[in-house]
Structures are given as structure tokens and as C-alpha cells.
Image 1: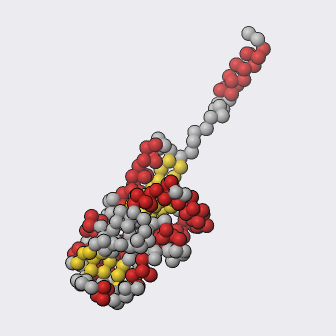
Image 2 (image 1 turned 90 degrees about the vertical axis):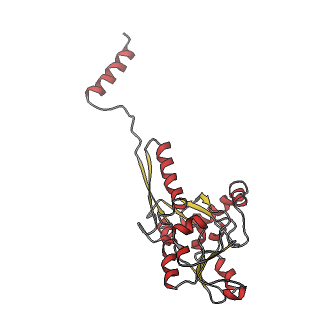
Image 3 (image 1 turned 60 degrees about the vertical axis):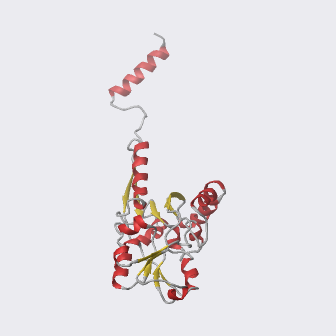
Length: 248
């Protein structure tokens, strides 16, 4: 046995005898929290966050887990951007136009009146430099984006009274998703209100709102709007394809 072999073997034996493991370290598990702006009852919209969490856990062999929290559990529905900016959470699931009060550019990442359809939004973000431009803007708020599903063209909303002409909209208190919708509808006399999904039903029921738009029949029925506002109209020209997102 040559000397180098002996040193090599005795060296390993010494390490093992001392109970010291070789320099191979198990990768630490990653735990993130995702706060949604939507209630858990919306299984399609909120469900994309749950699907994201399940997929990340499966692909990482359980080493990367994202806990998903509906609106109001960790913070109010519209508090997620402030939480990301302060590093309180790692992720959010939301609609960017909810935060147009901070800057109108937020709306461009979700929907604007007479704006992109679903396919056009996907094309612009993923192949037309759109996401790169938006992420450069969102960097000041400490996050970047990933699409979380698109609603496609939305309905025009639920109304407590019948709408026959544009004149019937004057003075109407209406919940609108956010962004520049309110400015557009104000030209028709609508008084725009911004409310999270989970608060709309009660406002309609009490008459605090005269009308509300959210997404479409499936989600709207889950929120019960049809029980308190009998008139339903189409289309929601202000949302040709609202792109929901993960803020990371």
C-alpha cells in the first residue's frame, strides 16, 4: 500500500471515528406565505393560488411549500402590495388594477377599458416585452409578476334597478374592479366604488351599492349577487380580459 493511499484511508477513518459527517448538507426547506385578495369560495380564481402551491410542492419534492391565505386571513384584500413592499409576505395573488390609486400604471398589468383581450394580453406580456416593462415598474414596490389566469371578457354587472338608457346610470353607486374604470364610468354619471369581492353582497343587500360588477356568472353566483340585484347586463366593455397575477 503506498503512502498516499494509506493517508487517504486513515483520513476518512478518522473523520468517521470522530462522528463528523462529510461536507454534504441537506438543502433547507423553503416556506413562503401567499396572501390572496380573493375569498376561498371562489374556487376558480382563488383556486389558481392553491394549484400553484400544490405544483411547487410536488416539483420540489416537498422542499418548497407555499401556504395560501384568503383575503382577510393575514391582511385585508387590498393590503397585499403594502405587505410585499415591507417584506411581510413573500407572495400575493391579486388583480393589479386594485392598486391604481398608487399609480395608474398598475391598471396596465390587468385591464383597461377597451383594452386587450386574453390572447392579446398574453402575447404582449410574454412575447412583446410587456412583462419586462411592468416588472421594471413594480420593482419599486419590491415584487415582480407571474400570470395567475385571465377572466376573459367580463359581464357588465348586476343592478338593483333596470337600466334602459345611459341616463339611468346617472348617480348610480356601482362597485367597479378598479383602475381607470371609475374615470370612464364617471363620464356616464356613475359614482364608482372600490370594494373587495367579499364585501360586495352585503353592500348590495343594504343598498349601499346600486350595482356591482365582478367577473361572470359562475363566480358572481357563488358570491350571491343574483339574490339581491335582479338585472344582469353584458358586456363589461371596461374589462376585455382581466389578467390576474401572482406578485412575488
